[in-house]
Length: 221
Image 1 (cartoon, rainbow, N blue to C red):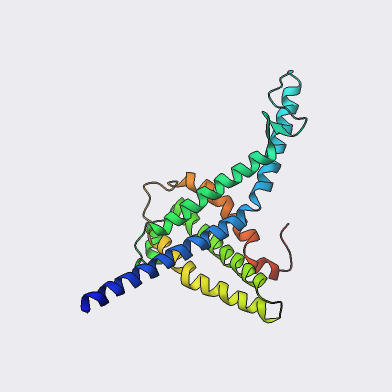
Image 2: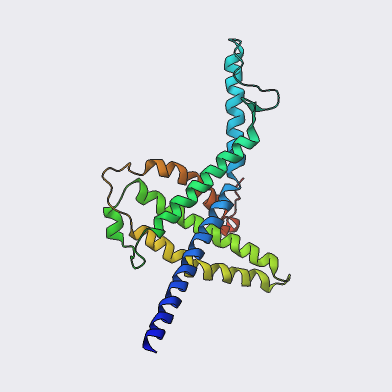
């Protein structure tokens, strides 16, 4: 009987850990996707401007490396290229952010002194980006819950409580694990390549995925 109870407890603990891990990853995926919804449009604007500039520069030399009649780059439609680029950034950001807490001890807790010792590019970017993504993921979850609830004055509050519960149950432990696992870098710029991927996602998550901005007297474009 004791062996059966031990196995049952172990199975229940394993199931709880799996559910927690899935919830943490789902919150990150929701937040990154909400941010990436605004990324492809900006990539398209940048690509279009780059194509137009290159065509103007090449027009004087008679070069035709770029076909500008239909807004294409070497035969590939710019909207498709922008969407593929945004998808690549989104996938990389999900992998980097999930790895930041999945590959760390569950019991680790952050501290100010430990963060100061680990100060570098990674120690600045990871906490800021991950917090924005988790908040954006919770906000996306709240909007989805509100959509499935019957329309009433209570629905927004119920959706907000669900988002808060998700943040406390999944977001805070994930953020704490990621920050506590930061190690002192050999040089301050260590992790710069990953930061270049995470920074635009984090910026867009804070700009468009955090409902705080709607409470301010000005609004983002």
